[in-house]
Image (cartoon, rainbow, N blue to C red):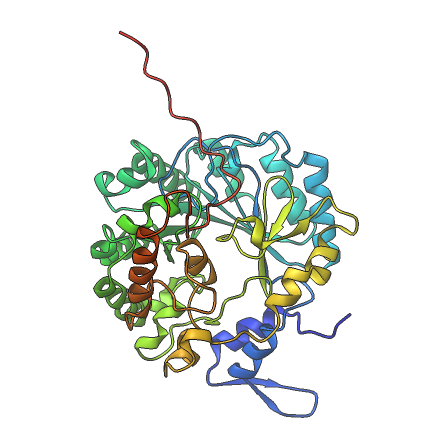
Length: 410
């Protein structure tokens, strides 16, 4: 192999013990967190966490869906193919996958796939809107080991949540939580995408999670998927970004973020986490048809590395794709080179830049110093003076949004 680090235990140790790891190298040297992160930036032999969207089919049509889900793709991996991918991941010693969609429980073979993964020693966390977690399924889920469940909820009340996720989705999610609690599943997760409408509810989200003995997970809204068209109206304001940062500094040890907010580190002390873009280095996405992307938030042809159906399977894509090799090279600070906060924020999120039309070596659109707003304004002015047929914002591909229903004539 290439001799890169691979142990999740080492990574977790790096997150937990700062500023110096209490782990000894072969030569007796302590290993700093900074050294660990610099190693991770060059990539691992296998991803720490692989996100796998099992299906594009979904019973909801959330306005910010990162995968533009809705309709099933007829090219979706079969049960046998899905199991084959899991066998490959086992051989690579991948120990954890994050299953999503669409709504993964829509697939009739959902439990068969999850049980095959766990049987291969690969732990599973799956994200769901909760629609299909009735009392019987909650008990079945509670009987399984190495399984984590994440229920999506974007408001502490129906009005806030349903405006984004659809009418009835709040009650559906709460019912799933009640069923999991009644089945003694254990500490599931409540996953919240931060928007300008729910940032004022952060304390109440934490109270809700605590009431279930659950863990709160707060993630950043990206302009990915259908979010391309709703990000301008939904993303938190600059003042709210600062509010999120200070709230996480006060509550971060008990709130997961998936490293969503490392761009906020420019405000002061670093938030808990690796605080780096892991795209193609420690994380990647496999979509329902087997395409492999650098990150769940960049489902676009420019960031497709290959397909698990290709010769050599996932392992060859992960280790040999030109895209991933490029992402593992040292990245230029570009327009942010003169900013004293670059080492803290790392220039922000690649996906957020890409889908707002900003250069990848430019500022994050939500840069707390305001550089992103300036860059977006300049891009807007440039766009206004350009023919309508020319767009500076890439469109996500593919799009599985359900077509709007045609009203029945009276």
